[in-house]
Image (cartoon, rainbow, N blue to C red; front, side, top):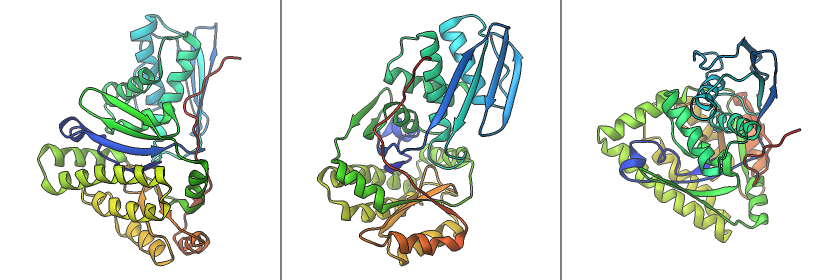
Amino acid sequence: MGLAGGGTDVAPYSEIYGGTILNATITMYAFATIEPRSDGKIILNSVDKNEVYELPALKIMEVDDKLQLHKGIYNHIVRDYVGKPLSFELSTFVDAPPGSGLGTSSTLVVAILGAFAEWLRLPLGEYDLARLAYEIERIDLGMAGGKQDQYAATFGGVNFMEFNQDKVIVNPLRIHQKYLDELAHNLILYHTETSRLSSIIIERQSKNVADKNEKTIEAMHKLKEQAVMMKEALLTGDLDRIGEILDFGWQYKKNMAKGITNPFIDDIYETAIKNGATGGKISGAGGGGFMFFYCPKNTRTKVIKSLSKFGGQTKRYEFTNKGLSTWTI
């Protein structure tokens, strides 16, 4: 869940100006299981998508639209670490729907990489795995996006992240549990029952920065300020400011690129505010998926009821410090 600074981790902004993000992991997961085989076959099974792909063990798989993340990761592992075909069955499941804005693709990549690292005993630390996940998604597969999701999924917890041209620094924040409990209670996560292709919005955002669009660049500067504001509010327990800080960021985020919001999203946001929320934002790049709203005191129930007319669903969650976990049975 990107709480502040979203978008400043995307090139070329992060390479020119440096990006700053504050995010937190929640109790929704991506799962990957590898079962070694001895029959010279590869089976890729996406359980939540109900997609199965079977083929002979090859050194390089042809990457197409069907399970491209699974194939891209396999190709990279074989090319850089193994050097020979592998025979196995890989099964995956993701709690959140695709296009939801909760970093589902990056979290799945981290989970699959973790499974391969566990199976093959690859000497990869947390920073190595997160960087590798980024390279596979953004470079090997050419998928537009930033860096925060890969690092968030790998490390877990509440993190203040800094992105520069050649490095990423993850600063874990020690937030009192009572503050996190209150934040989870007051911050409702609402699925609009719509999805979006984040790459289109991100490509527009990147082009705006490359073209030196002043409105976009100023908006992203303000979002970096928002990340610092959010960090201070969480560390000091000044939770009444959370909604105000979210709203501050949302007003600027809408200026980053066309498609981040639309009349439907604006209507949802305005309805939540009228019924007691003090601020919110859309999760991820924008355009659809999940939104979240800060509802102080006892306004939570009223806001949830007011949003029921839009046909979406409120998702229950908790914050978690758990990042990537792997094991062998």
